[in-house]
Amino acid sequence: MTGTDHGSHDLVLTQDAAVNQEKIERLLAAEPGGTVRLPAGTYPLARGIVLGSGWTLAGAEPGDGSVTTWLTSATPDGQPIVQVLGSQVVVERLGFRPPPCSPGEHGGDRGTAITIGSYLYPAEAQWIEGIQVRQVQVERRDTRAANCIAVVGAVRDVAISDVSIAGGCTGVAVHWGAVGAGVDSIVGPSYHPHHLTISDLRVSDAFEGFYLSSVHDVEVDRVRLSDVEIGFRLLPGDNTDRFHSSAGNQVGQRIRVSDAWVSWNGPLYAVRIAGWGRSEIDHAIRVLEYRDVLVEECTLVPLPLAGSGSADPLRPRSPVVIEQAPGVVLDRIRIDSRQRG
Image 1: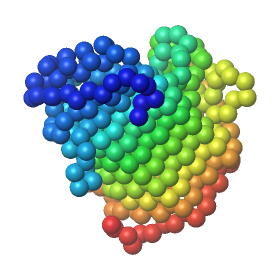
Image 2: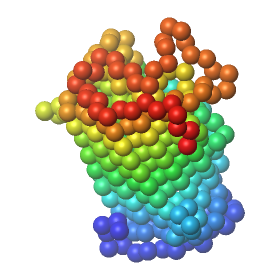
Image 3: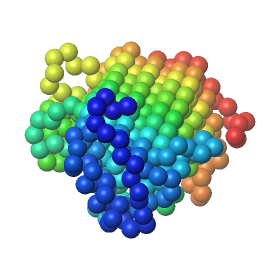
């Protein structure tokens, strides 16, 4: 399952977060890869765990279609419950209940259930690849300040499938990364996730279903985003492709979003596709040229505004907003105000 010949391990966990942490970390440090199977139940961790190359982290067999193994964490510093930093990794049949976290505007990879990759690197990074996340559930009803799953930076060949998310900021956030000490001091190169597939994604009661920021070669298919403030966004990244160093730059190319159902309750839009971004470094506005990008077969269902929210008269509520993105094709986009399911 992991592409390695290493062993399988069935761990016995307890309600002692420190003991659980020690068991998992000791095993991950002892071998160069393998399979870790966790039993059914809900188990605390003292902090997040890091998966290097060749590991599969799996829960017990699902019951009635739902996961039966849940992980929680008490980490106070925003560390993801699981951070993937190696290639050929599988995370499957697991549920996550992340602790409250408010990582801030540029902390989209912090406080998550799962983060694949990193946002900022101290030096040039190696790509990680061959990652699979499947049959995963995330519950985050305490706050909308942190994302649930993040795919960030030097990451490619990733498959995310059969994932259910309740609550949180963005269900699945896909974002570029770069070498630099901070967002206002990036020196490059930059890294843009690609060869990514997201399928059978279900997000409810969250701020946003998903976004794709400065990526290429991505397919999103069969998504249901219910009672979200925003359905999804295609974004250029605040520095667009300024720091991309490889020949034949492909950022913004070959992106497909299809078969999406979005019921949205926010004051702005269900879908935003933007080609312009403002740099945090020099504050200049740059435009990313999209090519071979298609958004098709989407049903957008406007719901009454959530809570006491009201639409901005200067920015009227609109199902779809396109901003400087002429290379994007929309096909079979349906607005249906009658649906409430």
